[in-house]
Length: 219
Image (cartoon, rainbow, N blue to C red; front, side):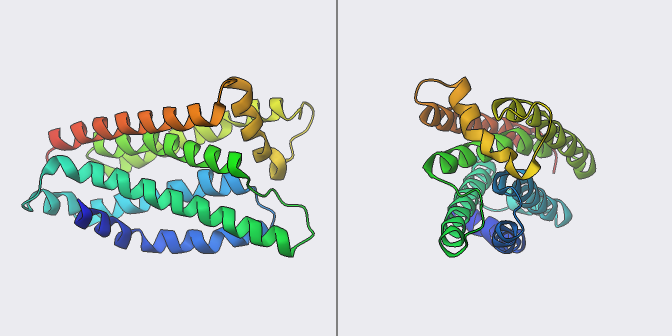
């Protein structure tokens, strides 16, 4: 499994390096940090890794190796989880540095934001990844995942504007400040622990579903 995870880290190098550049650029240009990470970086990393698999027929090669085929998908899930945690922690560090150097108002993460962003990213990946293992055609899978992604993205505007009191206006640069209050509103008891546990459980179920799809598919 470690070898498979190393493979995922290598093939995700380009989108990961792009994320390392995009995050400080987003703070400088006042782009909403949560929408940059959850709304932009996650789809780019997931789609790019799975596209490289599809283009190189990587799954056909991987199952021919003397390894347990049941470990192929879990290794991918673990790799994506670790990459995501690194991205969020990097975004937190960049935000703290920028906040200490600049007097301009920016939304800087605290521990609640970090927990929320990590959990939201896990949930989004749990929703998107099985689509690519269900369909043999990458184009169909990508089209469906893009539709689901935009449905989730635009669907989040309404509860966020409601919790922020933006009844007659929407400030896009400030809208991601509503994620933490929204979590606290709908999960009154230990909201961030509960959100984290729920996201991990759903991520695990997503991994099991994707593994089933992978093993049943002809490669």
